[in-house]
Length: 224
Image 1 (cartoon, rainbow, N blue to C red):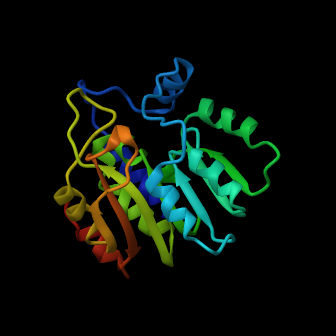
Image 2: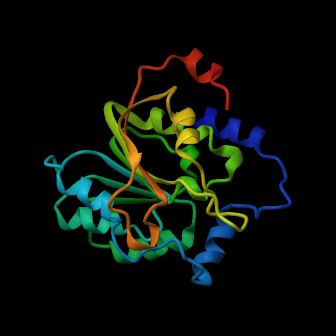
Image 3: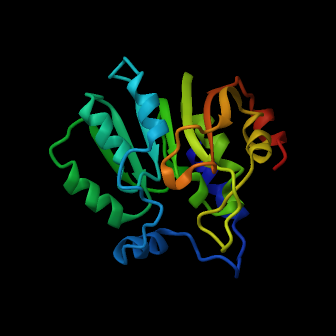
């Protein structure tokens, strides 16, 4: 399936003169120049609240596009034992390798999310989706669905505003996300976030999604 997503991503890619090429080189430059305005410097309050009520410390966790991985640091403090971090930026991953060098509970992968293989009980979304090239957004729910175990969950935050300047980040709306995720997921929670970080108040959708039983035909027929 990872090869499938890589091929689809390749054929979907078209030149766009209005946006930068959002590849590893682009993100490495952001870290090198400390242009990391998306980073809050701490665990996201809504995700912290969700993590606090988890009781099974052995669940398989994935954080794609993890950046400085503040959520992972918090998970470690609570004793979670199986955390995988993915980021396309080698600069970010080198920082994390040093930060978590003595932590056996964390696996750090410098790779393209759409080429990843694995199975997880929980995937945390925090400013990864908004950083994706919009051309690839339709692949995101399919990839998440593919990576989640049958009873797994996607828990995360999505911007419900459109940004004044060209992205990243790229915004969206509640209706847009409903259209994007409904074919693949059942929503346990899908509502405006009430406990966002102060800088993001009124601009986030909080979701808890469980995968539907999807067939191959479902993946091929959904329009984006």
